[in-house]
Image (tube, rainbow, N blue to C red; front, side, top):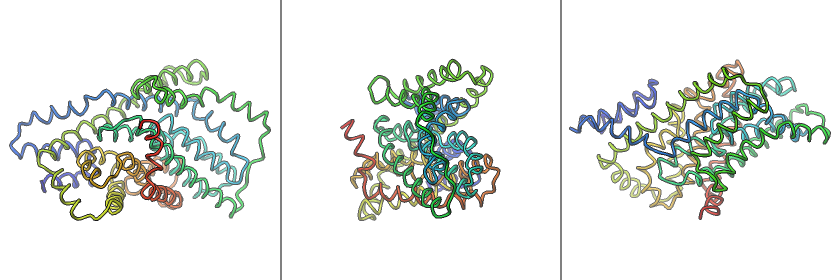
Length: 423
């Protein structure tokens, strides 16, 4: 077992793709234990054999189409029409545009690319300091993994064997809370440094912007409405999201060519395949860990060494912070989540609270060097150095950390709404 873990972390640190890391480490353990190598293929197929996971590629495709089409611009225009005139309003509008765009894409990278490319020049032209702009673009983009429908939350729900719809719902309040905390910081900074604000927009013009943005604003309503209204499963809603964005971009806005659509779909399919392969290989690793009796050993160790649930939650947060510097936290949760399930139950920790905490810490990981994905995307979009992006992001990461603390001490922020809806 020690050799397996050493191989796992060495491969992870040197930058081997996560799916290959997991499969390689599991293969060593399974074959060294005298098991038939065919188990690798069997468990990999079992990991992919999930109807719910079919939602992942469709959400990725619809999100990419919306990000590279007219939908993202219309969303930003609608939010800016109402928030742009307050102090720091353009920055606050960017934060909430990322939150709303997250309800379409479920992806942090898509948020940073789409909203960042659109708002970065506007924020700089409006007189916002570059560090503040970099912080807004980089960290607000991570809201895409919290606001439902969240692709990481879908993966975690599948791994933990819990309701995907309830998992989606658990992200509403923490996502909005984090956006509000970020917005408060932008307002205070803008007020202290006298950042220019936009002139108020007349109501007639606001209504005109809303009319122009109607189809874009209806996108999250259609996706989430079909899920929570009981009209469609998350997988069916994901398919609907693709059909909806194709209809809007081709028939309503008419700004995307068939060739552009095809190129976007090709890239999205590769991203979806990568995620699916990661989940499939995680199943192999979980099977190996279970046959080695690791869940029982972990259960006995943690329940005897840890005195209460808060100590366990802070320990998990520390683990997620460290892991987030090297890989996606959600991927690690897919592996260790099923193993930790009995421990969470012992300490009466709701799996919804656990999932939300994991995603909040993954938001920090997305911006943490050396391998933070949003960090590199923001550097490319803004043509900025890593120290510049990290420095500008620190106050906003404090906001995310504060949200995590609130979820630890007030778990109802994550659990109240899904329990109210689903019991």
